[in-house]
Amino acid sequence: MWDTKSGLWKDITMKKTLLAFSLFSIAAFAETWSGTVVDVACHGKDLATHAKKCAIACSKSGYGLVTADGKFVKFDESGNAKALEAIKATTKDKDLKASVSGTMDGDVIKVESISISE
Image (cartoon, rainbow, N blue to C red; front, top):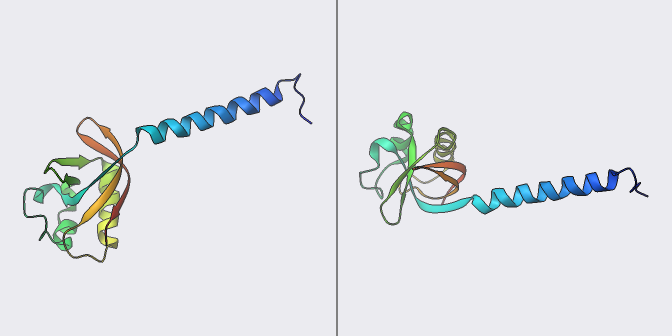
């Protein structure tokens, strides 16, 4: 049985409430975008024929997502690493369509996850 006079029960309940609120807040601000992952150096080229080999070779320029409306949005440094990992892992040779989750920070996506459609 909990000792409600010492405040132990109240302390545990408050911690659980704060944890739940924190998790809800993070999820509430996360967004998901769909488009084509491409390196910064090649984002103006024909995306349907842009090769995986080129995306890996141009990795130092960074990565971003070209959305359905043609807008290019860069990834943060962590997102660049995640994009390179996802590109290396995919079996696709071109047309790197993806779903990206994260938060927008100015004109950059702080990437939480990237999933390239197979």
